[in-house]
Length: 446
Image (cartoon, rainbow, N blue to C red; front, side, top):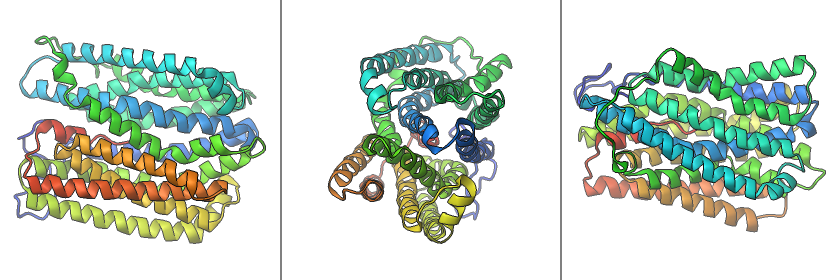
C-alpha cells in the first residue's frame, strides 16, 4: 500500500525473482483486519449475554448488518479517492489540505442526504426492521454519521503513508466496542438501543486519538478542483454499495422476511453467517499483504508476473474455500454450540461457507479489475450479484434459511463470473494501470 509508484519496496525482487513485493504498511493492516474479525465474534457473544438472550439481541443484529451495508458502502469510496488524491500530491510534494477540505464537504453532503432519507423512511424502518424500537433508528443514524469521520481519517492516513495509524483506526474499533459493551453490562443496562449507540460511537475514539497525536495533519497546497477527487467516485460508490449490500444481505433479508415470533431465528442465522465468514476474515488479512503487490506488478507493466500471482491468489482462495466449507459442515454445528450456544445444522453452515468462498474469489478478482482501471465493470459485476440475490431469494424456496442461502450462493457466483469475464477483457486489451487505480484496488472491504 505504498504510495510512491516507482519507489523501491521492502521485499521487491526482479521480475524473475521468487518473492512478491510487499508494500509498506500491509502487515499492520493485515493484523488490524484479524483483530477486527476476532472482535466481531466476541461482540456478538458478549452482547447476547448482556441484553439477556437471542430474541433481545435481534435489534442489535439488525443494526449491525444494516450499518455495515450502509457505512462502508458509501464511505469506502471516499476513503479510496481521498487516499489516491493525497498520495498523488505527496508524490509531487504539494500540500494536501485543499483536497481534504473538498472531500470533507462531499462527505458532509452525502451524510446529510442519507440521514434525510433515513428520517423520511423512519416509520417504515422502525416498524418493519426494528420491531417498533425507535431508539434503534436513532442508533442507525448515529452510526452512519460516526463512520464518516472514521473513513475520512483512514483515507488521510493511507494517502499520507501513515499506515500504523490507519491500522489503529481499523483494529481498535471492535476492541472499544467490546469494552463499552462490557461496561454497560456491568452497570446492568439491558436496553438494546443503548448497545446500538455503543456501536455508533466506537470508531470515534481512535479517530480522536490519531487526530490529537497529529496523524491527520496536512499541509496547505495548491487549490483542489473537484476533478482531482472524483474521477472514479461514481463507479466506486456504486460498486461499493452493491458489494457491501451483498456481503450483509443474508441477515438483513432474514430480518425483513422473518415472522414476529422468529426473532431468535434471525439471531441464530446471523451467528451462522459470522462463523461461515471465518475464512473470509482470514483471507482479507492475507489479501491485505498480497493484493498490493499484485497491483504494483500490474502498474509496472509486468503482466506475466501479475497473471501468475493472481493465479496463486485464486488457488489460495479455492483451497481456503474447500477447507472452510468442509469444516463448516463437519465442525460448524459444534462450534456454533460452543461459541454462541445455538443450534445450527451442518448443511446451513456449509451453504453459508460455500457462498462466502465464492464471494472471496469474486472480491479478489474484482479488486484486480479495479487495478486494471475497470471501475465500471466492477460496479456492473456487483450489481449483477445483487439482482441475482433478489431473484433467487424470491423464487427459490418458501423456507426462510434455504432461500437466503441459495440467494447468497448464486449471487456470489454471478458476481464471480462477471469479474472473470471483465478481468479477461482488461488483460486482453493491454490496459496500463496507473498509481491511482492501484491504490483504489487495495482498500479492504469491511
